[in-house]
Length: 370
Ligand SMILES: [Zn+2]
Image: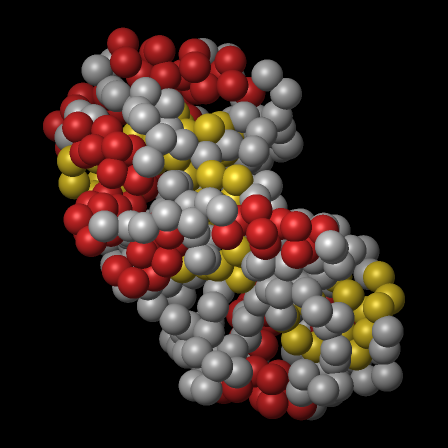
């Protein structure tokens, strides 16, 4: 039996039934927006990681919207979804999740949990593949920026490293952005209480019995942080300066009017290129703006015709060109359109590229955290 079959069989045994009340509670507690990501069933052939990608309707190419049925399938173990942290319409989130997966990270999470409690803030510790996720639930959606001012500020006061800026190892605080630009998604985190497909395992919250109803009952009973409470905790505070994102390197690229000459993506990229088949492959600059595509293989550029390029996570030509500081003239830009809606069209529109011309070798989209 192959490793894949073995994993499948193991995951079959982890299947559960999700009662409608648990699904409804989960939706209310965790879902900030309808866009979501899906963890791939099969590992990437090179990295062996189970990447997350945004699922699309096979016929229309539209990004799928999360429904209670999506949640049910996630809880039951048929699929595993990632949840976005920010509702772009309000710049608010229903929760803060602190992800820690470095050595001894659990000690840092427990320390953080203790000091949160000193501030009157309850949190739930979800076990994970490595380390864990600490969740703070909010009584109502609150601004991502305010949540980050509080949680990142507390962590830094406690000497706990926070990933971001120049800090490469440390906790990650979701929402990872203070606000989202239009048409952006930010970062998604694996939805709790499902199956981690890489580990072929369910991870539960501490302090409650294993089982969907017991776990949800615990999460429901947990006191939620209120708007007043957060306002008091961040009074007079701002985002810690070390967490402000470094200036995007695209700024270094000078926009040269090309007087009719063609745009060559290679002239605007300074990330490492790898050759895969007939293409050069590198990190997509638009994905990189959101901290995605860490494996650096979302952008394929045709070797034969370097005018042709495509991002496999669905970034449009306009998004990629804006990210390298070389936007197309405004009258042609499609910037207002949604990334997910354009993903199928891009196959024929992206500077003349089609999926047939640039085979990707079975990998699926953008890498998000587990
Ligand atoms: Zn991209």
